[in-house]
Length: 277
Image (tube, rainbow, N blue to C red; front, side, top):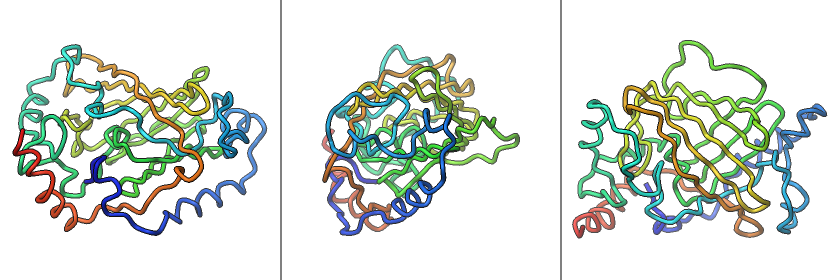
């Protein structure tokens, strides 16, 4: 998969038209008055004009990009002694992990993304590539430039279905706690990593995401991982920062994962870089 330095390497001319089509379709639905107050479907006038003004804290819509610099692509910015101890099952998986990039990069790595597997949640949130949040009456959508991936977060009061089939993104439901949008996700498969350090998770993972609109141009996120099969205690991550993209910067390129291109980039860039560590 593409890292920050390679973000524009394989640039395509077309924007992601299917995102625009879905947004256009969703906006024709009339919002009930109570929901409109909390879950507006459109950016505020200030967001459209690019003026940095106080934001509606319940309006997360817009195009955002991860602001933390490398090596911040983990639950913590760096591997920390404060992280909960791994179980023997998780430690074995962690020791086997050979990331394709980052501080643990190894030549000939076994990073799932090197085979064009989805990054999954939460790892896809740690790449310095844009994603868009769109709010509709019953769901919050997140569209990612990376992998052309997307997820839906139900906000209509439902609970998680029983007997979920494990997936890369899991099943997500969201609600507001004051000015914080809390996303509760279960039903993951265990094929992805939590981050680029190779931290594993199991199908039992329960992930909490706490989003807060700090100001008009800033979104914060704190992750909470509960996975008793992998970690001996709840893992509370540090706060991540995302910046609102405005004007000409607010666009996403067509960046699908193409196996032949990934292999070529690995051979030309990743493996030589890993060998120099």
